[in-house]
Image (cartoon, rainbow, N blue to C red; front, side, top):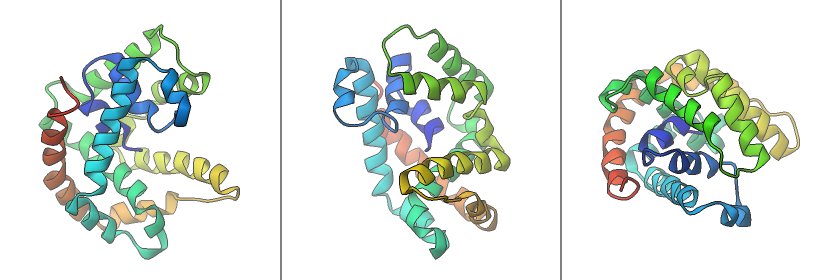
Length: 197
């Protein structure tokens, strides 16, 4: 969900970055067929998720979510935090967001290693539709929620729409941004000790 953060926090090579993305797509024994560097990226993704899921500031953000969306509060906070990362990008990176996303997309397109077909399709859409760069706009976050809605509808085997939850971001915008600004430097520091060699 929060792929921009995962990619920024990855080791700066294409396989680690792919692994950080694939952790949300490739599950179970299929991961064992991926090479070591991709598996290391998956492990980094898991480090990020464990730290995030247990952090008191993230819990505070989840509690801001209205009870009607509470079941999906973790997903929503992940997506909202990616918005604030994109918005405040230059606080965490020495290249612009456009330069970073172009590098990511180009490296994914050029990657010659073996990947499942589904993964190839997903990364093709990510690049073609600039999912990462779109995070800087509230409209881009709404589109992300629409994509998640489609996945949830398939999983739940019934129509489900998460896009109305964009109102949660708008209503608590400043509070979510404050939470993000308190949390992300701590995550950044934590991950530097593990994921980036």
